[in-house]
Length: 83
Length: 83
Length: 160
Length: 160
Image (cartoon, rainbow over the protein chains, first blue to last red):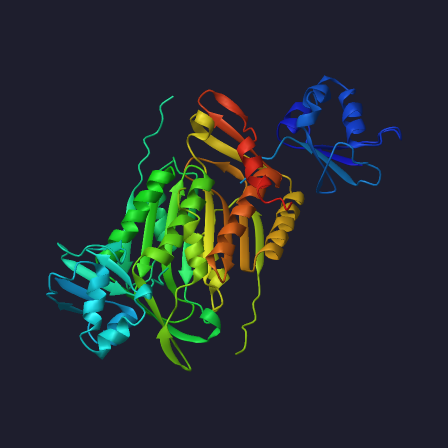
């Protein structure tokens, strides 16, 4: 699946998007954040406060317990500050 | 003192303004409306429902029991419908 | 840091001519960097006021008092909300459906103040500023009656 | 009498270019006589965001989701209020103080619907549309933090 990062999440990870293939044990958004965080320090820094991170699956806001199977695109970003 | 009439009050009375000299017994707005109403049928028609009539003394909204002595200009009109 | 000097220019006009919203907003905001929010309200003559088909509306006002009454409410608005500018333009004369009647512009640092002040000013213009509308339709002409909903809208702003 | 057919054209745009409020209002209202109220909100880059002196703001968004998220809230607005037209334009890119960032336009028969829908849309744009602001000042640059007051403003509209 495709993963996108925005604002300081993007800056900390150092890329705007990537393709990932998490193992089947990674079921929810929460699991995915933990799995990404374990990759290296950049991810760990981006996700150091998981409660602050907002997630969208296929362009719709979801909560941390949302199931990721079937998702084409998952995005992680800080609270929005538009308008 | 000068009296001004607006909207359908003006149309019913048939003039936009006039100078009047009410007797000293006419103390309040209410008294003035009664005194004007007694002049002829045009005034009586304009003031037939005194509770509907709004009054301003020297450009400020006042109630029916407001004292008129010292007023330079008194205006009678229907509820406002601007905006 | 230095806090920027905030001023609140106020413009109140009663006129027959149309207004240009973009120009009025430019006048309020030009060369300023302290304004974060501008709300504009324009009131337009509709064809279907109170379920009759309107051919035209004629707006009459009480010269002198109208300006003073609007000023009183603008002063109240600027004392209740942190505003950086207010413009109120009310047209008088004869209008056909689609034409502009009234413009209220409010500028502030934050949107909430600008929205609330604009709504406050419109509610008071409707119920307290000495203007009257006469409508002409295919079936004749008559004075527009005041709406209870407008009194209720204005009553929301009364401090308890 | 025949009730006029009411339509509610919706325009949503995310663009780098500035917008022209007068032109956008004209597009919404031209050749219509059923609109009595138009509310516009423009959000402008301020020099003093959160008590630091801003040199510039850079707006980033999530292409695709941003348009869809705004569309969802415009659809909710048109279902909650009797609207005759909605335009939302959000700019992205780099802005200096005084420049326009966002425009919300709502048109309705009556002012209350137009005011409430515009405020609703702005509250949701602030808290739910995927845009992020980075500010540059003399002391460096940083991402603007979300404001609790914006969440509270948006929460007002949650149906209980």
